[in-house]
Length: 261
Image (cartoon, rainbow, N blue to C red; front, side, top):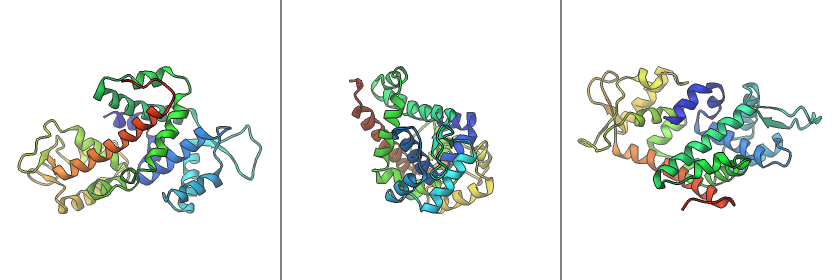
């Protein structure tokens, strides 16, 4: 639910992270900005990194950076007079949202072991600039995080697909399968598409594919009864989140701050 709150509070910036590919591109660009000596991003270096990590083509990455600039996620570094490379930097709002993204994952880890990662992060000036790139570096090394498969992949490559799955799973009150089905609290497509950048028509098409695969369905009439998910689909979602949290924990532990016991 925390990510849904972020989406509602800053939809313009959150939209840049809307699909799996855009998420990886935005995270890589932000990590490179944090790690650069002057806090700027040079387009040529970013394009090289995108191709090296096999995230997208150079043209796609180039257009994405221009979109980030258009929507005010990054901006030209006006302190530099270099018209050839046009170095870019993160705007304050984007830095703040990246801090929220990191904090959400640290709070989740703390909930497992009553740790104090989130508190340490909040109390340590400059930690975001160290921790975020360390997380992204590990995520880009994970096949599960960069190339998810199954029904999970079907949704992650659509606009706000990750939030679509978050909405479904956040409504589950009983995770015990009944006749091979885990019933959610979702009763219509409108409930899922509401406040997200996905049309009801496009969502319906994706849902229909997942239905044919047996990954989800409706307890009664399609779109007017409760939605159910298969245990396999839920396992894909949990495996992806667990892998990401594992990368966050590894990155946190790699820093020279005190790690909770």
